Amino acid sequence: MTGQADPYVRVYYSVTYDDKFRGVYRDDALLGCWLRLLIIADGMHPAPAHLPHGVDMDRVEKLVECGLVDMIGDGLYVIHGLACERSRRSQAARSNASKRWGKPADATAMRPHSGGNATAMRPHSASDATALLTEPSLTEPNRAEPMLGDPTDDADHLDAWFRLTGSWPSPRVTPWLERLATDHGAGELISALATEWTADPDRSTVLGRAETRLRRDAHERRKSYERAAAARSVREREQIEEMPAEQRQANMARLRDEMAKAGLLPSEEAA
Image (cartoon, rainbow, N blue to C red; front, side, top):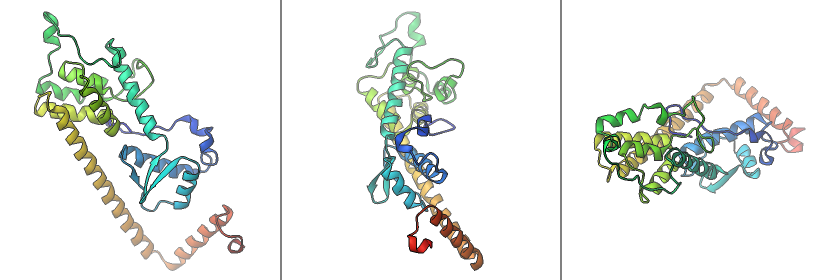
């Protein structure tokens, strides 16, 4: 998931023929369960995610058997391959920035500018930083021309640092930026940097303050999700309690029929 205004998760066409998705892609319920787990895990990455309330554990077990979900105990899981995918996208963003500015991928600093160029490359003022939040080239992909390097819709956090501070990230800053972009999304990182730069354009502290903001926001999102999940649980329980007995019996009979057709009941019960 990116940190843009309209976040999303990626599902590649390879799910239609990947061996791990054999028996999953054509099962709407199973595919839907995997997608739901992916959305939650992507938002929690790199931390493991909690299984959502009410998830069908039989389907989760099937996804584990297929190698699509890795359980790590205490109701926590990760999506198999998600860490590699996020790392690949981060590397793609880094390659884009190095190609755009004619620097190798491990370039660390811009040369000092002289003469008329020096003014243009000064760090942005606090008031200028606000524009970083809305500039299309930083908050969303440029639809007018293809991106350089590996195709990616991720915002370019290294380029954003350069445009914000007027210098290429140093050897100390680069891995820090990469880690935060991987953990929280490049768009979220850029937004936090711009906000903190607006508050105090101090290059020596802005990244630390941005990380604190990102961690706090992630914590608030987790709390919000847990509150929403608890509220859904209460509503679902109330709906079941208010349901007429006849309807509950009909629902159970329909569920039993579906489980029997799917071969999920013992043969003597199915009969």
